[in-house]
Image (cartoon, rainbow, N blue to C red):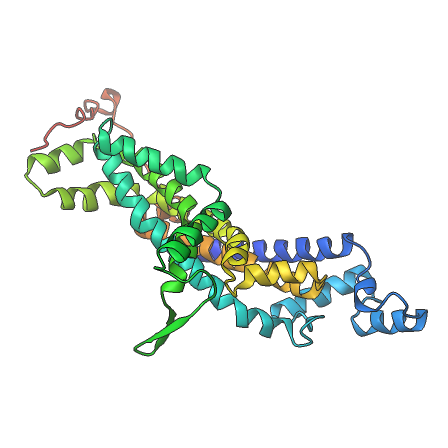
Length: 344
């Protein structure tokens, strides 16, 4: 187990280094950042002073080494617009995006997984058709258009939820968002919900007719036990993969959702930084976004071993199948029993 985790952590560190290379290259390929640091009417002396102040007078290799060291300390300089460290700007806005992503994924899991199990168990029936239709709508309807529909129907017409902004409430020692998160979370989580529904249904269709499921039914176990212990647990591997891949989609989709609902998160901050040509803030947001995706991918690797401990075997040791002894060894060959023999 330890060797497996160390290997995955090492791969994650290499991915982080790769992200640093990509972010650094994108900023340098886009042109000389000096033009963004000084006004157009600046003199050559002012340009040179700005280049020296931001380390742009060094070689590319020296700039990359300095960039890696600063990134390891989460130091991306000062925002050109806010005039404060980029780290502080991101830390002020990132919690709202994380809240929205967690709420969207919770909605996707709470709706997609049960509907997928029901569609797989009742394959070919009405519930299966309704669930597949619901999943098809979730994958085809643009979330920004759906956000506008939600605002018109549930905020303006019915008045059930706020139409924009983020408000919070206190629960014990936590400060959490209130009903203002419902509409943006549902709009953002609709696509991953449809993905989870489809993959859950496919996995259940492969598992529901397995022999151990039929044996569990013949023993008279209740349906919730069969669905939870025997079907859902064996379908977790593809579901964990889908959920880890959807983290990046949620971060990207939040850009539009936060703009529509005026949600004060990092997605709206990124759009604002790009429009203001605040390259240092864009650099910091890109790094933190990639770091979040990598961390969730690492978490998915850990959850794989929890859901199916056999995954550790490939990294820790290889099991060998004993070779049957032949008659030349003085004994008759050992023949395997037919599949299913001895099951009671």
